[in-house]
Length: 98
Image (cartoon, rainbow, N blue to C red):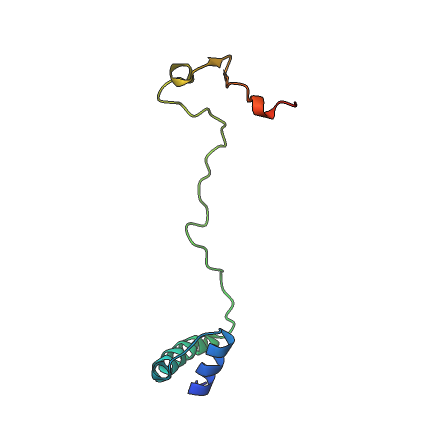
């Protein structure tokens, strides 16, 4: 299949692109090369085979473990108020019902 300048203009209209006349021959050649390259895939046909898998077929899995993330300093050292594992924050009176 070979693309024509009319095909390129049609695609430009569908994409709502303002295409200058000077760019049409260049884009026609570029799009024609792309379509020709993709057209080569048809020649491969439907060959049965193993599907492509990126990476090894059997990857070792690590056991799922829930672990606490250690902190550089304990919260009680940098928090204004920290009691029984909780950060204490001042009450927001703006949220109280009046």
